[in-house]
Image (cartoon, rainbow, N blue to C red):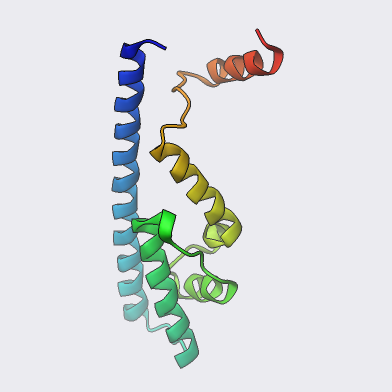
Length: 136
């Protein structure tokens, strides 16, 4: 790899990291907005659900701000956060330990530069993967 391509890769990774940070900020704003809607719509949570929701909000905030040092939501937190509208019901899997473990692993890979190059098309990516598989 030439010095120029290394510089490009590093620059690209920096841009990707900035994009991730912007997405995380938007996710935090969306969570706050959903909670404000929850208050306005009058969904009633019992005392236990309110305590669980508070724990879930704190964990989500930590995941969004510092995924490497975060804990996933447990099933009760996931269900309560979904019921309250804090997280979408079709996105519950994202907050599980299994999924968060993969996200932390990906974040570590990005931080140390274990990322692949960008591809302009799916065919270009498939050709690259075929070359790894078949040694072309």
